[in-house]
Amino acid sequence: MKQAIGRASCYGSAMTIACSDCGTLQDLPPLQRGATLVCPVCRSRLERTAGRSLIAALACAIATFLLLFPANLLPLMQVSMLGMSRGSRIYSGVARLWEHHWVIPAILVALFVMILPLLRFGLLSMVLALLRLGRRPHWLGRGYRWAMHLDSWAMPDVFLLGAAVGYSRVAANLPVTVMPGGFCLIGAALGCMLTRVSLDRRTVWRAIGMEQEPPAHAVGAISCAACELVLPEDQLLTPCPRCGLRLRARKPVSMMRTLALVIAGFVLYFPANLYPMSTDLQMGTHVSHRIIDGILDLFGAGLWPLGVLIFCTSVAIPLLKLAGLSWFMFSVKRASRKRLVLKTSLHRFIDEIGRWSNLDVFTVAVFVPVLQFDSLASADAAPGSTAFILVVVLTMIASQVFDPRLMWDAALEFRGG
Ligand SMILES: [Zn+2]
Ligand SMILES: [Zn+2]
Image (cartoon, rainbow, N blue to C red; front, side, top):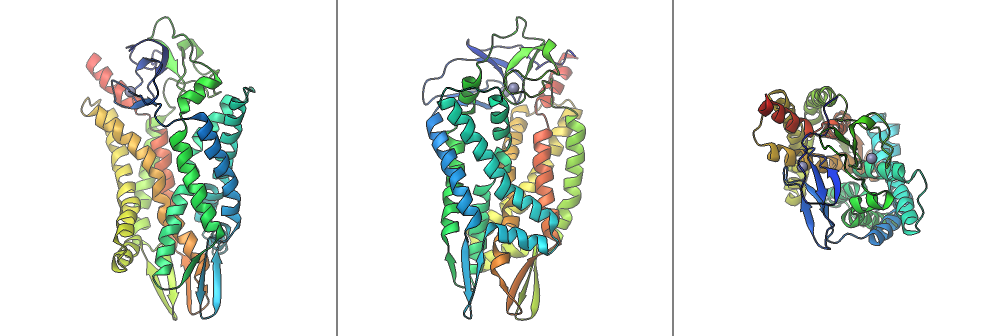
């Protein structure tokens, strides 16, 4: 396997890492506070010290972890109608979806909003607290790798925005009161965002285990896909000494897996948009809401900023992800040397923005439990919600399994040939 991390170009002098976006080996000089270091080849941000603090990240992670319990257990909002009142809890939305046989949305909402956030923030709090205490048990690197891996799948912040849209939809017709669980959800979502902003992942990796001396010859080096530790090529397929991930030159079967997921995403994109996300019963009449109907309703109610938001997250971003990933795969096949920096930046954007597309399904999970007034007014999920959440999940996995370094490899091989 001569397919190492690629180019052997080095910059500066200090700790060697390999850029995870283009594969270039480079040395990171110790950064001053407030500085940002950018990959000179693909313009990816390698390190930023401004506003980052291990103690602040620890405080935010613990606060988020603690707030997640009341946010999950207490009512988020309450709706009153003709003397009757109904509350919405996160688990009541999940239970309602499950009872009505919307099994896939129920399981995924429970994972993204209830289970994975608790795992992510519990694990992250434990790792940062141990580092603060100067303790380094052997599982610390693995624990931190999992906490970082769960980052995009733990979504209290996305759910808060979904709850805000659900609140606006219901409040347009009925009186709604925000309950204690809603305030705790706001706190947990803010804590989630602040943790992300204050956490410098590279500082934590260095605290777990410093980068080593680079191999004598840079060609023939491999880098860990999780912690970016650079190691000699002969350690291929062995576990990374810092985070335990099996070392590989590139993500395995990246192109085939991305292609299969993108095809499945394209196939599901049409039912997701053509079938209704939810159905309402209003005074004995069933009304179906596709994604586009929900957007038009928001515009009609004068809530155009929310309408634009839902259009971007539910219609534009999934399409951008599918089109972008198709472009990247085509680029690898054609060994294209054009717009490599743009494609790498777009891949990074797609990877980071993808989780926000769950917004519309979360909106349904919030307003379905409060609109349960029998024949007067009730709401339920519909087939489009299953297709839609699957499109979001498949495209999220696709952007994670696609290895952007393949575009740089292909371009370099073309140039070399
Ligand atoms: Zn780079
Ligand atoms: Zn590693």
